[in-house]
Length: 387
Image 1 (cartoon, rainbow, N blue to C red):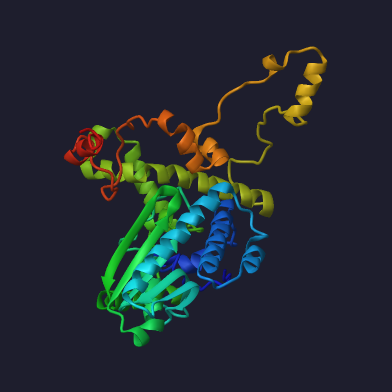
Image 2: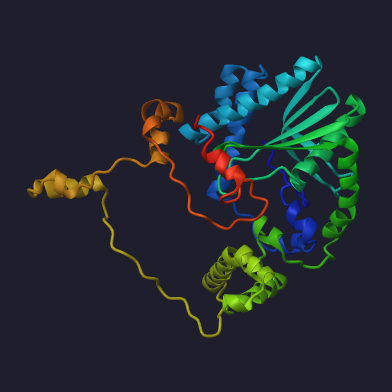
């Protein structure tokens, strides 16, 4: 997979479209790759290799060379199989209607016509019959990603149009999210002209973000885009402080709009306070920064065994203690059991013994696709299997 990144990346577009100063602000912080990001990169590399093998772009020997250094789990094997099968299904559907259909994997897409020096990598690009489809593999399971008005996908679509429009007379663009760990497949369809119009509206925002002259503007994009500068951004702090003043008011004194805003931001307020504290600790430890009224001390810790469990058990058994009395025996939870058996084998052996109790009512954003509590859609879902 390509490792080079553009200054104005498609993946970070939600931030720089809404907050033009985010590019300059984030440049002050080092790039750090999380375990989740590394896992996602591995899944993309494995999915690419499986597709290339299935399409006869590589031999089986080449395939094993591509994946031999990857840290692959059993779950990842299953989820990337799903990705491969989905992409092949979409490609074959287009090919059945258009013999010269094309498929490109991990394709570098140049969208500099709309975004200064802009380029990125499309996981899968399928062209045929006057249609382009971008399929973006999202391996994360923390947040369900929607294709609707997804700026990253739209920018990739612009890059694909830039490269293929004059060759294939494109009139429609399908932008698809494939998120196997959440069973989420979502597609937005735009006409060529609709996407081009969106790209023209994007241009001035991209130019402003690239110039470094824009203002910091706080909003949901800060948290949704995991902006690295949140801990020191004054606009973000002012927005959170404004909301915090409402948090300390009795609910009866708040309007419905204010309550909705508090609910929407409550979790982010907690995350922000931790973000600031973590940043302060890092600065105090590594740069000697002193914060009035605070100092760095050794935190509390709990006792733990210096050896692994088998060594501890061996000592106790030799001392005459019964093995049953020193071990706690319990069945693996469903997630771990699926990982052990594979999802197919789990369903075969234990599917009939699994239930899913009704979830407790919870407030979510209106765009959530779950039916409203006690609505007709909810009732239909509850009774769909009853004849």
